[in-house]
Length: 121
Image (tube, rainbow, N blue to C red; front, side, top):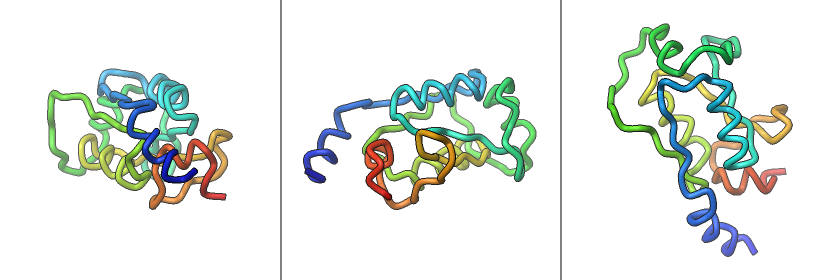
C-alpha cells in the first residue's frame, strides 16, 4: 500500500502555491485543506502573528534570501524537510509542518502525503 500511496501523492494535491502577499493564517488554512497537516510560521522562536503576510514576516528577517516573483509550489510528494527548507531559502522564514492537531512536528524524512496519512507514528 505504501508504494501506491506514494504514487498517489504525485497526483493528489498536486500543488500548493505560496504567494508572499497572503496572510499567514490563510496560508496555514489552505495548506491544511490541501494536505491535512498544519503549517506553522515562526518569527524567531515564537509563533508568528497570523495576521501578518508572508512578505511582512520576510522583511523582519536579516537573512539574505533569493527573491523571485514566482510563487513557491509545494507538492504532496515532497519530503517535509525539503518543503520547510524552501520556505527558508525563498522567504527567509522558519516553518514547521505538524500533524493535523498541530501538536507534533512530523519527521523531515517523510513526504507530506505520508504525514497527512499519519504514517510516521
